[in-house]
Amino acid sequence: MAPVRPLRLKSERAEKAAGALATVNPCVEVIVDSGVYHLDNIFSYLVPQSLSATCFVGSRIQVPFNGRELEAIVVKRSANDSAVGLKVISKVITPFPVASEQSLQLILEVAKRWAAHPYDVIRSAIPPRVASVDKKEWSQERTLPKHQKAQIEYLQFPPYENPYLVLSKYLADFKGKGSILIVVPDSRAVERLRKVHPDAIVLDSQLERTERYENYLRAKYGTGNIVIGTRSAIFADFSDLSRIIVIDEGSENFYEPRTPGWNVRDVALIRSELDALPVSFLGYSPSAEIGAMIETGTVAYRNHAARLHVDSFQPEFGELLPGKVIKEIRGALHKGPVLVIAPRKGYAQGIQCSKCRNIALCACGGKYVKESEFGDLECTLCGKKNGDWSCSWCQNRNQFLVARGSTRFAHEIGRAITGIPLASSEGDHILEDGVISNGIVIATPGAAPFAVSGYSAVVFLESESLLSQADMRAQERARNIFFTHSALVAKEGKVLLIINHENPLVGSLASWKPSLLLQKDLRDREETSLPPYTFSLAIDANPSESASLVQGFEHSRKDARLPSTTRILGPSLLKGGQHRILVLVPRDSSLVLTELVHEFQRRRSASGKNLLSMRIEPYSLSR
Image (cartoon, rainbow, N blue to C red):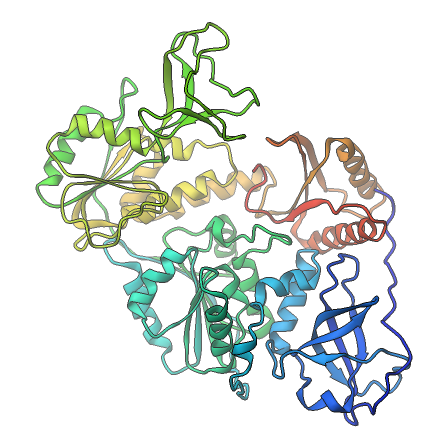
């Protein structure tokens, strides 16, 4: 990686257009939707008197830019008497602000933190314009509440209770103190929360374009609202925001899949710091990042004291359900419904030859899966189906199913416990809350419905498989799955784990203390210098340039442009043939790494090269 020098870009300049300029604050600074990475500067323009009355900070405007007319957003308006030869804005698109100074500051800070073009963040933060909505009356003075300090806390949900009703009781403490933003992982959580707060404003990507834009403006120009939204709602602008609440902050759904890859938890923390805004994280088990902040005292932890009846059953011969647990399930069915959590959906997530045990692979190299008992094998890479499979090594045609899914589990449980209603909840077929009053529900993680009076038993199949995944987040995900679904048990019910008796999960669930597992996870990460104790960058590159990229990072470390403790890992081979490079630096050097890769990307963009696919602080380092 060659030494990177800052690019110097000029403002758009031209002869002044005909017509008088604004008599007050004729100069505006704008972010332009150029679509070009290295043109991420703040540009200056002039405002004609004819547009002055409708051009505000936060207004959408149109500007001449490199021979084109492009959209821009005003971030500042000033006198700037030294401005000479600047171009004049073409028109005002929205005659009212769609963003405030505070929200624009947040957008710029997020762009800086994730080495992104500001307009890539704006696309997530501000819904696309709808002309019919713009014609409505939108005006409101900002009355931002004053906060003594940015109070950040994590509240653990209790077992046995509907978490959305618990949240509703918690919100009562803040009634009359301003608007509250609640960010949840998915649309299902939005609908569950709307049942408790039917008058809340919803900001969800599943909404129609018109409704989403109108709701965004209702939140911005209204007061005293409860606003419920998914990932992008974390940027919602308010005139009186008093608190941000994030539910299940460790969810992978909170990580933006598109460039620049920001996540809700970190954006909430940035927003808290900028505006001294209280933030409450609510969930069953904190992420590693929040866990580390709890240890340092940055986040106050409010746990919930409880005891659960937890039993473990250790399979002796690889059986799905040891004999003793079948007896427990039958007994529980006399008292109410039983929830069974299967770690995977489908029928079988892996196929082997029954004779030589070689893994069944498609001609493209992808693994085969099976979605139903009599269905064809299907490749996970190319999607091609194979209804006439035979082993490429020994020509045997009999299959051995590995990594069984929920559909296969349902068949096996139905044979073991006959005469009982059996329902499935997974994928696109998720059961509604409260519809199950008896029988067995087999659900994948996150798809379990609430039972009106709780489940008489919650059974976790193949518990070890959830804890033994290779991904760095495996322990964190598993903790959340076990605590979230164990909370659905009735007060007199039992949690039944198919797991080794000595596993610490048993005691952690029984005492309702995820910290017993979290602390071990944190110590392992700290000893190996992994996030959250280091700041991470993941780059996916073509094999042809991966070696030169690694060499460039090594030169940057040698030349002291990166800390001497920088770790450069890889390249490793990904499924699609790309190479992954990981760069880890101490957390206090995060800005150094971010600025380095930002300038490197700008130079690639300026020279006409494709940008590197990179993620700063990704959800996972290995996938």
